[in-house]
Image 1 (tube, rainbow, N blue to C red):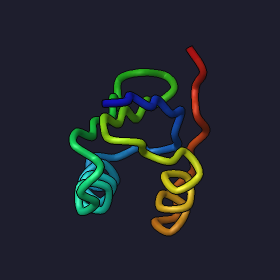
Image 2: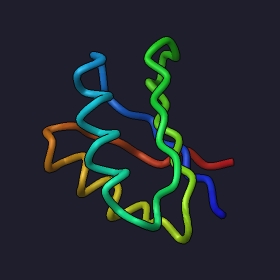
Image 3: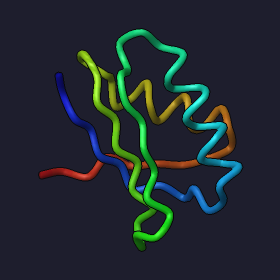
Image 4: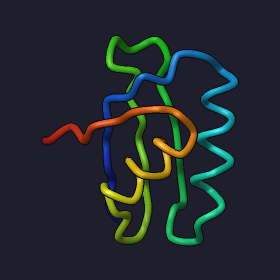
Length: 71
């Protein structure tokens, strides 16, 4: 399993719910969480070879933005 971490502009619980519903519909994504209390509104994804570009495109389809945070 791989872990990807993104800085996002997710700001409300309703956004978190939409992101979670969309991302967990993919079988290679096993866990999704967003920390609204963090200044970077961190999105954490655990999955099998998740694609950072695909994640960014999916969030953009919801009108949200993200950028991958490096280790």
